[in-house]
Length: 424
Length: 190
Image 1 (cartoon, rainbow over the protein chains, first blue to last red):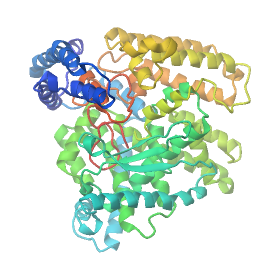
Image 2: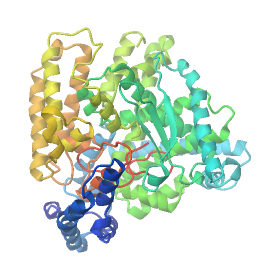
Image 3: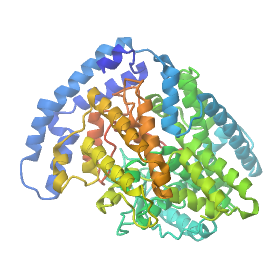
Image 4: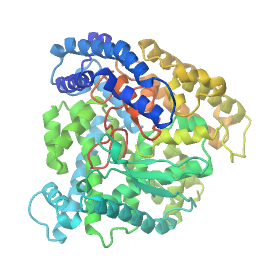
């Protein structure tokens, strides 16, 4: 940290105060109550392993970990006066080249910040006008698209009761969505994957710190299916129209389908599994899976669900604009927050934590939409090149079977598909 | 990410998946050398990131030492990652494409891309900018931030109720990447 500070790399003031606050919070907990201690002691007790785990761990926390954390706190505190409010990496030496590298790491393409920014602006607008048309067609004409979406999210007709009965209804609805989409996958893939999915709520004792929704991929031997966890601390976080697109993203034909190809076929060697951090491919596929939900007609009788899908897509386009805004166009943190709030229709609090995240890991958030766009670009290319021989199943199978790769490698696989006349 | 990559790794590793995948019957003359290099690369990656290996269950038998070791998070550790890429790229150059089956050529292209990307971070000699951070969505100018640091990562993984193998470098304290428009999460997700 001191070394980096010597190079002028110090976190912006808002990240600095956030960190210092977190660290003093951690240090205020007596060593015996630290999560390190309680977690170890609790697990030892649950498994009936004898020994004074709590005492031993407390000693390590108080004599080694807390002193180290205190030194880190003091180092940061000493740097704090040098910290400025500038949010972007443009301010560092060779900042432009550095952000270029971060974008490459995030999107696995050679797209420039300007190209990504413009793409984000265009897609944000295009999706907004599609949403506006659907809202109008359903009698919702007053206010911005964002305002109308907020109103929709608070509308009782889209909310589940915020109690155990309501939670059970959410889980039943998710199972229904998966059951409804499963038979349609034959129109999109020749691959015959079982891809079983268990739907569970995030256990109540960890839901405060857990994600909103996520997948645990099944075991390779097929003995444990993929599990789709949803955080049901409050059902108000999940208006009904937000659930279809989340489900297609996380389960089928999204992440659970990708995972099933790996676990059911065992076709990828360990090196490819260790090197699977190609976010644009992995998340681009999941966004494309959301789109397949729309293309398979899952929203034919669910206009609100279609809006939920478009709202989710729009949010990923917004990320392209604000990430590049902050790091290439010298936007301030506040400018980025304002822009994101105005366009997403989400709360200032939610957008502040998003923007702070983009300051901490620049470029990373661009991978989702860029990956999605690239998959669509390759699909258009294959359609054009193959004409009537284009088969959506051949294309989709090829993308899944390629596994996590940089976009350039995926592009070569699509060229091979075209050369083979569209047969995957 | 939600295709929990770490989970995938876990399941893959638990089954003892070796370098050459089954089903790739059409081997070419250069495949064996390439696969041997991939194997060696896997071992080295896991040796240098023992916590990661532990999270995958790859810390038994001859690799039991990985259980009680931490990866090198010093600046020397970053330089070692750059060297790893330089050496790896040199070895890859010695494997002409012409001798490889399409599947192995694809694997070679992926490994080469990852190593080149890692090496391209060399001029940015601060924060976490290297092969490993690039492959775990954790590149950052700040070694400590509100969303990453050793302590927060350790606390999270020590309290996770389900196995949640994490990448070895920066581990997010909260939400790194929820893509769905719902409030954030504690780890890379949608």
